[in-house]
Length: 396
Image 1 (tube, helix red, strand yellow):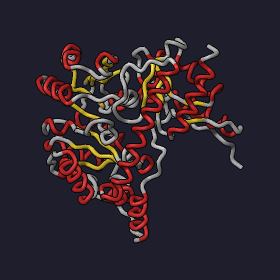
Image 2 (cartoon, rainbow, N blue to C red; image 1 turned 45 degrees about the horizontal axis):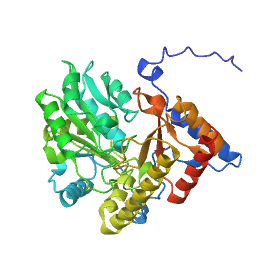
Image 3 (cartoon, one colour; image 1 turned 90 degrees about the vertical axis):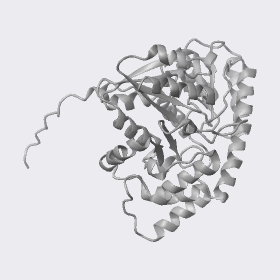
């Protein structure tokens, strides 16, 4: 036998990989799973994933496609019939006419945002990002040698940037602004008037506005809307994951201004080849009346859960200064109980069997005072979770 000779290392890990922050919630999830393996009952309110299964019509559509036995690539921009269905969705539900050529189907909303940033970002370009916000966005910017700049936002502005703040933060290298409505982790909405003012502020400075609308249909007490109603010079990211219940199918889309669509398509050809073919054929059933009736019933269930969780947390002494209007999250202050939300999250898991997410996962704006609770479990379990939390807070 020849003697084994270890290979030399390939060199240092790239900065974009070595400096990336971990998802702290994943540590909590691992701990929660370990407790469950020991026989503990854990109520999961940490991960932003609907607990409902993928609607049956979507499953059937995937099965029908797979039964044909031919699963090849689709065009890089997506199935033409799916792009047309998405465009029809905007026209029928939101009153916005979109050329299907502006729609690129992607490997999840993450793929949509990566492709959009790839098309827009030069090395050193800065992007303004609300803080707290979705934790992946700064790393997406860094992937293309851009510079993420945090915009601290608080409940006084519904956790969303206002136009004056954006104008003050704008620098010569600022490329644009990324906002979400409804937002993660807060569940708050950017009002149509504020969105219009942000659009004007960014465009007047020659920048780009990217709007994350992946929770668009999960709104409560008001009609859904889209930033595409402002005009064609906006980039909108959406997904089949949240409202449509297709998280693991990894399918999303971006609606881009016409002059950028071809560039994004070419990037998609090289980066991803195409989005999942079975997922695209399955998603054709997402816009049928049968599926929509299922999804609307689920949206109403989320609305009920929101009330149970919001009211339950407030009765326990948590402060919820900006009531959630969409998505499936409540962002709550924990000042009454602790100065360390991360330690408190671990305490709630270990002592109460309730898993939630500490504010540190969502940015650097006062994270030690916040927890995110996801109402992705049924109302009865949410009520039980509140009682378990009460038993812990009584001892503090």
